[in-house]
Length: 343
Length: 185
Image (cartoon, rainbow over all chains, first blue to last red; front, side, top):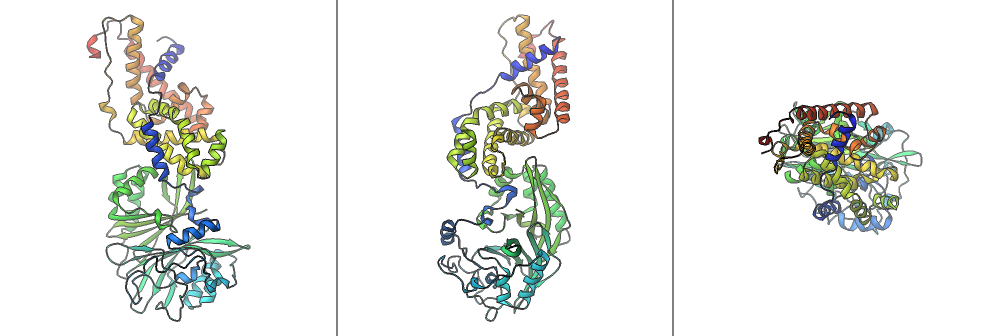
């Protein structure tokens, strides 16, 4: 091979050799997988966060146990199994408010806050004061609220923690207090909280999207993650999280799974529990199809109860997303992770 | 027509996406195979790329860049497959030798064997640059654009890849004066 031309000729001839057609089987498999895969909004915002057309919203409400015209304030009832009379989570279908009904509180005039800090202050002041009207005024219509409560082996989640009849006067919930400053990433806010009931006080995080209305800010869709008071993330929690991230960034699926409990859950966004992944097999598949992202902690983690919230950045060659992950740490392993990203 | 299909697929139309996938499938497989040198891995990479493309399509701002964007997803899928795979070591090509060969034919056979071996020693990012430039015929700025890396990085990767392959070829060609058939058994 004496010249560049020879080299080009040889290599390009060699490169031409090879299969030329994608088999139908491979294409069909891919398209089957596509039909099972939801599209993701830019920067990973779950599609459920965006306002849905009314018809879809009404249709969805009938099957996914979410109040179409919900109120965040109404959602701040007792956690399933905590302080309530039954000690078990309500049936998802039992508490669905028919989409044609409109909770009376939705008529409450909204009073958007000027800043995120002001919104958070107002929200927890209202909760601490057990002032239902003040809560309604700070919460946007149409928000969802998911609750995740940890007591025994694994946390439970439900979207049914919604009750139009919720009333501080009759509910066993005694107090909601902030345990520290919120983590704010764009329009996403995580607040360390303690919910106090007659029998116990349970700690964790509230996390919610801020909704912009008329130039001001209201609380949008939200989740509450909390658990029994004896459950506390240990000192090694951040190390566990760092190990998981390192494995993730190396595309080391086994390494990621090794940081998790056997029945770990991952929520891709907190407002749509149907996006959660429950089994290790599902988890492995999820990791294998999602790990083109690299993950980095971009701020210190904060612990509240058995949960750790960390501001994070996801990046890939095609873009990035800022958000917050909240991990449930059980016995130095990750039992649950919520990833929420900013719009 | 493709822009319309991309728009529809971006809005959640699976049939439109299927049309795009059928249109791009052969090309994606060809690229993936040339980077990975393994049909099974290449098929896996194509599947991954298509599923990711569907999932992430709403984030594609410029529908006219669909092909380039899809190529980039495919290359990243190839990187993942390459990292995961341990099959390459066992996937050594056995070349047929049917009697004495003319020198040109012999060079061709030897060259292909050495290219194969040399190429497998390259890291996947160098392979991708080499394939995009020499197989797809893209200019280096176009390669940089499609892979989403700086032009200098593309030049560097191509330089190392070319040197490695050239060295592999030249080393072997020095031995072809007295070819030994045992080499190919």
